[in-house]
Length: 224
Image 1 (cartoon, rainbow, N blue to C red):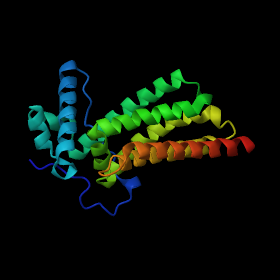
Image 2: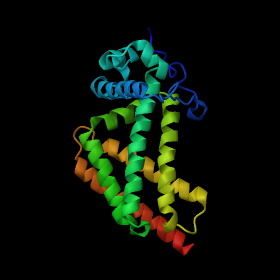
Image 3: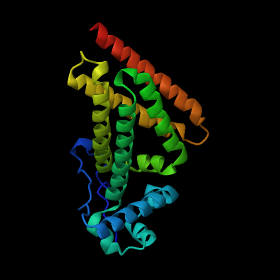
Image 4: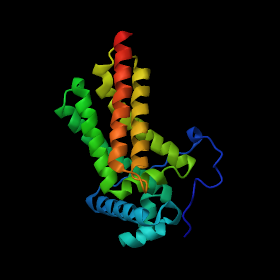
């Protein structure tokens, strides 16, 4: 059975007009949840090994030892699988950000920022699936549009953390600041793990860049 590919033939379409890719259903019963999670784990390991071009639903089902029909009950195609992996990563990062924010007062934001970037940097340096998923969601307009929604969800959480720092900023500007930060951090982390790069040095530059941006932003907002 050929894996449907919503990205083929639509390379020129605007990402904002692309279909958003979500599972056909998320399981509620324990047995179905285990199969769902098994499929995602198999998809993650396969994606790291073969990349998006050779990544197929048939191969995922075989690795998970699950009938292909069961996979298609949850996921319409390989791109939905990839976007669900991206969402899975997002949920984990959101939980860590909430934990850090609870530990560190918002006004002590340099410590929070450094701790959070260090956490993400460790994930990217020790878990190759982070970069594999990030690259895979760049594959089509639909995957990019779906990943953008996930990224905005994290940015919304960051905007809440920023609120005490930017009391004079309106909600739209605070959201934009958060979106710039999130996109820059993820892009730089991807850059940091490219072959031949000094990961620690890039992360140090990332901290300097984001701290400088926030210092300028907070200072501007305070003066305004």
